[in-house]
Image 1: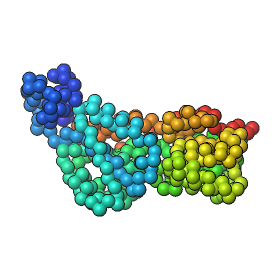
Image 2: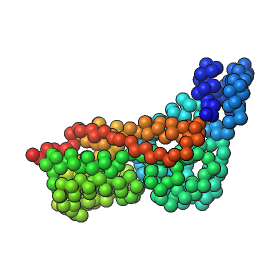
Image 3: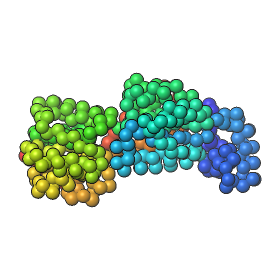
Image 4: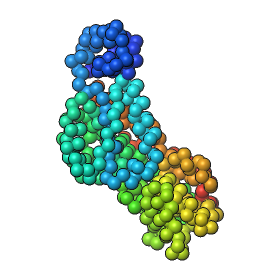
Length: 333
């Protein structure tokens, strides 16, 4: 088994971060400490294994609507960064824009950097975007995106089952006319959530009415504007909506309330992500909580396992969610 930084840390008593800094000749490690670390690293055979010294966390944008409009990802990144620090790896943020003029050159540089391992935040990724990463010369794992045909491991949310259970909750509360507030930019996570919604409705033998599906933009403000425009047409409303994420749900709630439509007395709403806003809005939003920091940590732990043990088995990790009941759903029966 390959020697890793943790073993050097246990042998020397220095933290993994100090070990990493010394082996990468960074400032802040005194000469005596560095000499001790290098001596033990040589004795354990680690020096010959040195190659990857950092993790590059790739924020991949197709249009930025999801990444830029949702504060969901900050905690995920924090979890990854903390796990890197604990393991003695530096983490760098890299922004990749699919439609940037230098996109191909940027990806080429990333996948040929033998000193780095890659975490690809795949929220906005579609299948074809992964093709160049299949040729990566360095280890790679995806975060918030995973499919069966990928050539590498991934960590993702159990979107379909989570949305199925949330829709079933509305049905159990007596709702039969259930609408869907759908994000206009159809990322894979949203498509899976839609599948869960449809599955729950079909299982209960309820009709999915197209007029109750409202496409909204994915920032809170733009969702509000879109919903205001929709409500001006005086549409017939369902008794409940389920939304692709909290930002959409919160924007729609504001528009409904400004049209004197009461929540949950007139219309119930469920969101997804359980952002901090969900706890402080009025009424407090029932939502699906995602373990964001834990997802980032899991991705790094799996990546480090690949680095240390050369794991050849591709692993798909689906993270379970928690359903948080608050005040935005009314029981009809």
